[in-house]
Amino acid sequence: MNIKDIKEITESQRAYFRSGATLPVKFRIEMLRRLYASVKTYEGEIFSALSLDLGKCEYESFMCEVGLLLSEISYMIKNVKKFAKEKRVHTPISQFPAKSYTKPTPYGCVLIMSPWNYPFLLAFCPLVNAIAAGNCAVVKPSAYSPATSAITEKIISECFPPEYVAVITGGRQENAALLDERFDLIFFTGSQSVGKEVLRKAAEHLTPAVLELGGKSPCIVEESAKLELAAKRIVFGKFLNCGQTCVAPDYILCHSSVKDKLILELRRQIELQYGKAPLENPLYGKIVNEKHFMRLRDLIMPEKTVVGGEGCEERLKIAPTVMANVSFEDAVMKEEIFGPLLPVLTYDSYDELYTLLLDKPKPLALYIFSENKKHVRELTERLQYGGGCINDCVIHLATSEMGFGGVGESGMGAYHGKRGFDAFSHLKSIVDKSTKIDPEPRYQPYRGGLSWKLMRMFLK
Image (cartoon, rainbow, N blue to C red):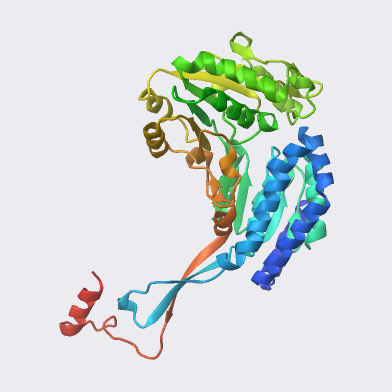
């Protein structure tokens, strides 16, 4: 799509938004129901697209993408009327007589830029929040997941007119052209490096942005942890989608006393969940493209590999891999892994955890496996991170009742459920002042006496 086409789409969306068509809550609910029905209709094609792009099986595609999206749509249909209501707030007596309230209003025309690792969910989930809040939207899916981009475009073009919701496919040229346009909000999910460029371009127009990035999310395993269960849940969270999950445990930081037993349990769980030959398991996904396959292969340290390490370049598959005796100086610890490689590092004392983690960039997620409630409470209070789990992995993002987002280097803003509605809304603060009487103490010329005493009494 050329620059002229992009400009025409954004201009038509501005005109459509200004018409007020997207504002009625009844319209928003109707659009959400239309989208829900379309996703159900094309469920089989969605599964096929995700299989082509990432080797996902139907079970995983529904569990991690389609099912979560349907839940988010249902949640918004049920709650959007409540979310969109004005809310009365207390009015100070100094402003008597008046009433005060907050009023959620849509930003207007928003840009949603989605990634390739969960290409269906992460294109549509922010869109659901944007529609519920009353916005128009341009969706830009990743060029790395072309099959899913195609079904995304098909569903959106059948559900909505382009002046309301449009899809723009393509690569860097289209991304650059979109970021040169003036939007009312930009919602971006992807890498930190691209996120920085998005924020730079947004700053040129003073456009607010929500950034969902990533980082090296640690998984702490204390000596009190139930190791068999911990290993089972870590293996699920780490190797889901072949490790290509922004909130996957990036590395394990375990107490040195339990390292050997934990590695034995990890090996056992990998075999139980993926079989003795994971590369031959049809339910195990693939790396998205050759570029990322080669990057991950170069991060594997054969001398430190204790589980897995095998790969098949032809099929873009890398076996679930565990590396032991890794240090923060190794190459695998210098970048977000985003693949099925799991380094295991150790610590010797509880106090050492803070030394190891406090000066690291704030991660998108943090996981703690422990039966020590005091340690859990202190770790969740003192360490800064987007969100996480205690004695599990990944599942904290699978609910519309909590926001999902990062902090610092892992992002800004949050979405899902009410937090998603709020992310795509501006909350106006309004005072409705009575015209029946007009107290005079605030007006010039200022007086002493009773007016001064009243002012001091009301404003203290």
